[in-house]
Image (tube, rainbow, N blue to C red; front, side, top):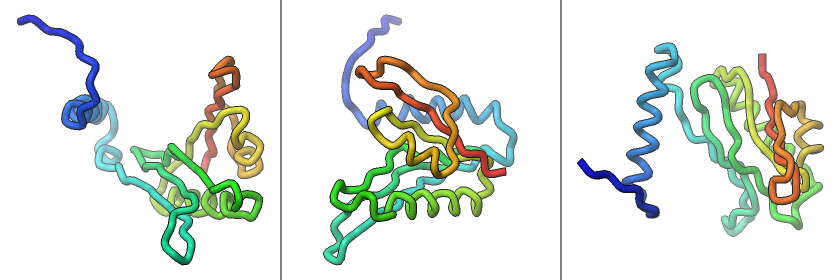
Length: 140
């Protein structure tokens, strides 16, 4: 059999790779955690229903991971980010997550997350000339 590597953007192939890794990982987790996957998406909307910010994340096994948190620039410093983080934490506690994890760049929201109880557990220097921080908040 002759194999080759291709560089394509194909949702079917992407889902195959993702599902393969999920199946492999499931063999290494206790049964009570295997089915714990849920998307967590929260949105700030105006009166017209337009999105002005939000959180995109997921619950996976025993944690909640925030992939993206964004608030439109003109709405920043008004407490919307704090409200989003509080809602994420409430969901994580209700779903019996042990921790929340996320990442941020040095020009983004490091101090914001620290004020909300997140701690840096790792970093990468020179990530596009910035520092890439990996953060975690224990819920136990």
